[in-house]
Length: 343
Image (cartoon, rainbow, N blue to C red; front, top):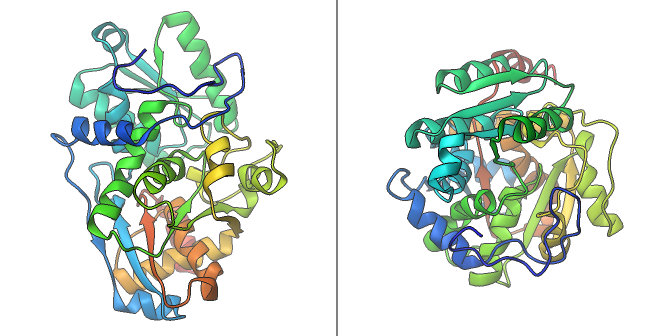
């Protein structure tokens, strides 16, 4: 067992045994912050009058700038948290992960920092700029599969055949604890926040947020937002049971998953105040809004929380609401289409 973690009563393992309780405790987030603190500084939490005007309804928006991380995305927190929990032997064998980009970037960056060999599996046709950046941190890159779920099968085979340690982007307690540190920073800086709106891909960021919320501010409403074209977890949440989708079609590659995940679906079901979807057109509009009101670049997955806040609108009138600009690694071609309002 990894030191410092409090295991749930039942966790679904790789053989698909069910998870029936919360994957981490608040202390795990605190421990993760202590481990990553020597390497990562807290990111800014900022407000912008033009953004408040754009959102309307008297809402005061606080933006958590994870786009200011070393890899321009929050995943460095998660992966540094996970790798600092590994044994010396596990670090020597090396690690592997499947990713659409930011998880791989974060893992490659953390691996280079700690001297851990990293293999990253990405889908065919993945964001070429993210691929180049992953290679730039010294990771081995394998391009295979039509989407994340198929790519993950290759990563699992490398665990079996080469003895690599899997760093799953979602079903990993170190990953979720690291993700939770960003919400811990938010609530330490703004303890009287009225609501939090969080994008949901696989759910590590949102479950990290909920873990902190239930310890420090159990009265704080947390809203989940998912891309309409990749809404497996959203639809499952409303159905009250896990569902799968045949496709995940969205410009938000960080949200493009087709299934629920063992460590995150039960807490999301229990903890979210509400769960909504936004269209790619709305996400593109949020990217443009970030550019025009804050002069910050947001990738599509990172703009989903702002798109969700715009959708929630009057439900949060007069409130101070936190959103997370989780990354800025948008490729040039997609950005061009967004700026030209072709999406």
